[in-house]
Length: 172
Image (cartoon, rainbow, N blue to C red; front, side, top):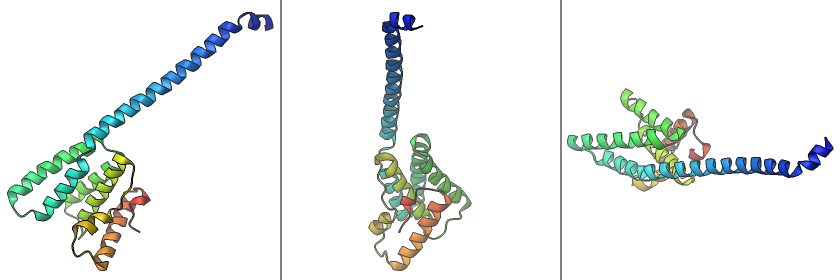
């Protein structure tokens, strides 16, 4: 047996080297394919948070039935993008929004809270950084006060817990 190993050591080293190279190349190719896939996904959803914010703004200003139809069509496009390219948590949030929209069961700040959570989640999906959903309200609501803050905080935290989302989306 020793003689066999000594006589064939070159072949054994070559075969072991080949196997190591094969597995390293396979792993590297898999990583590259995953990276390309993720880049393509990011390309497809990079403008979704901005479109969603624009849509939320138009919901606030919407008095004309013609505009409502337009915003509904825009929402459908955003919904399709999220369903097609976004992660599981973003899909959970959009499903929650859709379910409550159809049932018309939103409480006072629940819809806006849901959208602000969705925007925060999309931002995390895109750049890996969590931003508090509360910032949307601080920026958009002129008379954002302590009583409103406690209602919104409560609503956001209820939704985040109900959907089992990252605790980083909770408002402290």
